[in-house]
Length: 395
Image (cartoon, rainbow, N blue to C red):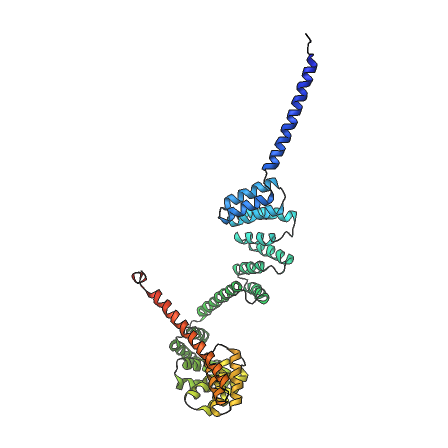
């Protein structure tokens, strides 16, 4: 019987073990490659979790992605944003800084790190980061917007205002920027009023501000009383007679309004609103010929004031100056195309000019606008009634 030599058996075993290890290693590598998600898969999974507001889950996905794709700036950026969303501002800052070490101009990262610094009240660092973002991309609007917020926190109001002005110069229709600017201006105005009131609560300046505020809320009686106090303290206070005349006019106290407006015109004969208010009072009193010269001053003094064109055109039509009246009324429609009264006057004027087709056209526009106005009033009334309804009524 033939004997197997030991050394041959050992060699065979060694070869078998070696091949097994190689195959096993290759298999593990293949499995690992098959099981490791791609970068797009990581992002897709994380976005799904973010969409359901599972930010902790998204954070874990990005952490796993960072292990498998080390030094990838987009992974780190998204991880930093998740930290920021979770209000983990120090962690987000550290992560964003890693991105900036890889690429100091990586898109939006300077903005996001500025936002995180803002979140922990490190205002100087926040402004520096926003400025870097704007150096890279001067059109990046969010950097201007939040830099304005930081400046407001520092009471650097002039700097905050400059940021809002930049935003609105680039896009005057930016409602968010307009809203924040209005809030900003209102807050600093109220602060200034409080400071003035603390300095001298009975000063003419404080009284005028209070009176203007009451005029805005249509409390004309209070406003007039405050203006009268100003007049008693300082008869030469600039604009006091016009302010009183306007409030009397709005209160429909025409005799007192006429007296104050005439005093206002002694100070400034070309004051457009003073001329218009006084002319309107005179027209209502049938003193047409006295009103026309005042309106002829008012219209060129304020070329964008539609009511001046309308009233003067109406007066000219009554005086028989039909071509002049037509020119003025057409200008009024250019300034305010949806004013129904102008179209009604045009319809009457075209009848006098023997142009029935144009008269009918203007009357149809008037009727349409009148119907729309009535519908809006009815809708507002219905809405108010619903608000005032009791719970039982609503059921």
